[in-house]
Image (cartoon, rainbow, N blue to C red; front, side, top):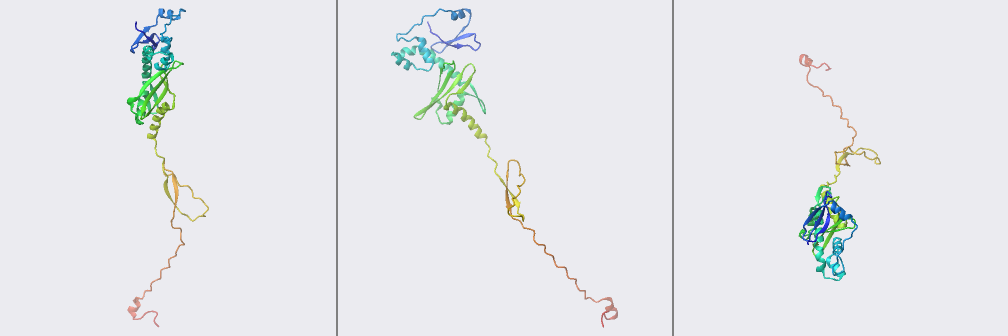
Amino acid sequence: MKELIFVGRSEDNLELIFMDEDGGEFAVAVDDHIRRSINTNDTATVTTTDSGISPRDIQTRIRRGETAEAIASEAGVDAARIERYAGPVLAERSYMAKRASETLVRRPHGEVLLGELATGQLANRGVDTLTLVWDSYRRDDARWTVTVSWASGSGGGIASWIYDPLAQSIVALDDEARWLFDEAAGANAAATKTEDPKPRLVGLPTVSEPADEELEPPAWAGPGHPTMPVPMPVATNPTPVVAPAPVAAVDDSPSWDDILFGHRPNDQ
């Protein structure tokens, strides 16, 4: 008999979703028979492995993010016995990580998929995006912690978010996740930032006024161009120079009397 793992409810809450070891999904309609079976007081017998830990406990711990190796070490058994029950839960975790990476997040320049945002930002940092590994594990509050890890040189990094599958929301959980959000906003703001306007030099005439009197500010030179007064020397009003009156010219040409009588009237 094939063993199935309960994954959750359908979006309309009318079906229960199960998953097998290969990741295949199965839907079971919630009818009266299932409701009566769930509400009954009879308790089913829980089988245990030869290690003393039940398959349900193994799957619950795997779903919370524990590794099969850690569980096997604690139980004192071979890891292969634990991995036998871990497959369906690991498939569930991969499925939830994929759903989270396909969730739209709002940024100042518009909405973008979480996976595309993380891949683009890490590629700009020089990270080989082929090394990205998405994973998730269930929290006690029924939400999921979603992670993306990467290798970089001799080290690597990891970013974490809180994912709510019902609300389809993503919240950054650490500094790396916040960087993936904030860096996109900062790059967009830097691309649209304009240079502050520089002052425009405006010449002002120098007037003969007391030295301790300040100059009046000049008129505004236009939008976006603050002015800066720069004194410019100009000629002051000099003392007016009066031109000498023109000298009347003396007319020494002979008059009509000189020609007619041969002498001038003023001759003695």
